[in-house]
Image (cartoon, rainbow, N blue to C red; front, side, top):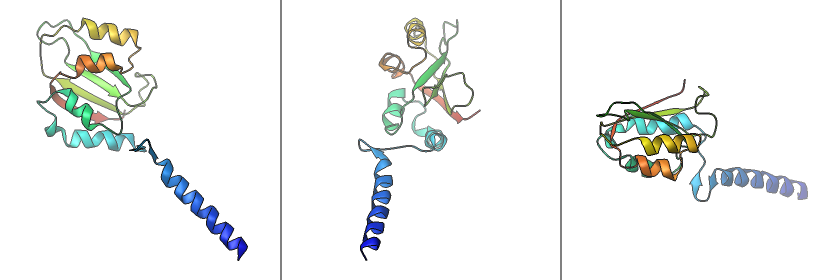
Amino acid sequence: MNINFKLLSVVCLLFFGAAGAQEISGKKIISDTLAYAKKFETNKEKYIGKPFSLLLKDMAQMQPRKAKSDIREDRDNPLPSTIFTFSDKDINSGKEVIMAIKWRADAVTTTPLEFFEQEHNYRFTVSEKNFLENKIIKDITVYKP
């Protein structure tokens, strides 16, 4: 009987330990980044025509970690799109889940963003977030190369 009690205790510890490991600081751990990101693509109608800050707010469980913008010398649309990844790996690795956001055309200068991306090695920091949060979303595409 004593052995059965110990075995039951070990099983309970393992079960509750594994269940607890799925949550850190009240946030669930995302085990499938592609599925998580695809939810936003599936519901993109909620975000199209709205500021990027709304999408970021809804991405409470996992925020982008890297961002690389397509910066052009077009005065009417210098920033047509930005790609976001969800890990700290090299943004050009080709093996990451990518969320590509097309922005509504505007004439806002991209000089600060160019500086931030170079300075921060494409990490999606508060500076990049502040620059992009008022950009209006035109389209969202999620894929894994």
